[in-house]
Image 1 (cartoon, rainbow, N blue to C red):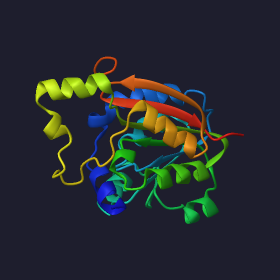
Image 2: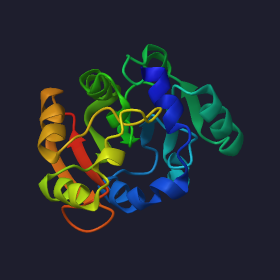
Image 3: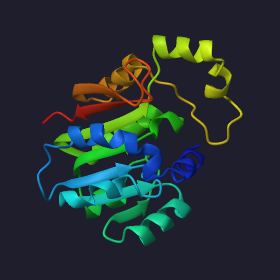
Image 4: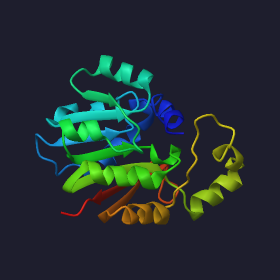
Length: 208
C-alpha cells in the first residue's frame, strides 16, 4: 500500500500544492538558519524546493523512484532518498540524525496505517522538534456542500487509482497526533473559505 500511495504523491507539483505554502511557511517561521528539515513523502520535490532560500539543511523522502529521479535532477542541492514513511528511517537516523522540523503535505490521507506514519514522524524529530502536516479538510459544512453539489460520489470515489483512503476531520487528525505523543497542536485551514477549506494545516511538537 505504501508504494502505491507514494507513487501518487510523485505526481504532485509545486503549482497544485502551492496554496499550502503560506500556512506551512508561517508554522516554520521560528526555525533558524542551519536547521535540519525533512519532507516525508516529498513526491517530486517541488514543494520542498520552495524553502531553498531559508538556509536550512533540506532532505526529502519518498517511495517513488520516478519522483525521486525528477527531484534529484531538478534540485541537486537537496538530499533526496527512497523510504517508506510508515517505517523507521534507520539509515537516515544513523547518518543525519533526528531533525529540527518535519513537513508532510497531502500524504497521510493515502496511507493504510497513519498511526505508524505519525509514530515515525515523532521518532524522526529532535525533542522540541516541529511537525507540520497537511491533509484535505473534512467537516460538517463541507460534507453538506459536497452532497448538495452532487460531487460526493466523485469526492469519495473508491475506484480512483492511488486515491485517498483516509478522510480526516480536525477532531480525528488532532486525536491521531495526540495518540502519537505530540503536544501544542495548532490548526489552520487553507484554500477556499472557512469550514469549506481544501486542506487543513497542523503544527505539532515533540515534547522536549
